[in-house]
Image (tube, rainbow, N blue to C red; front, side, top):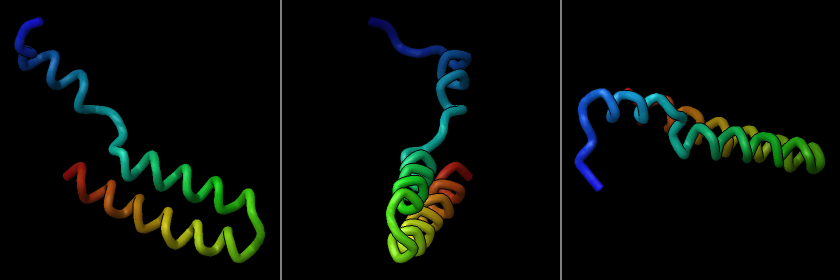
Length: 57
């Protein structure tokens, strides 16, 4: 095992954050339920997407 170089670090930093991936999953699961579940999923999932956006900056 060795320490990562600068190039290796930059290759891994391009992925989605956990909040972004989780927000998309919550929205998708919300639409799988009824209308009330979809509305709740949009609120929670949308909030998670916003947090993921600001986390990457």
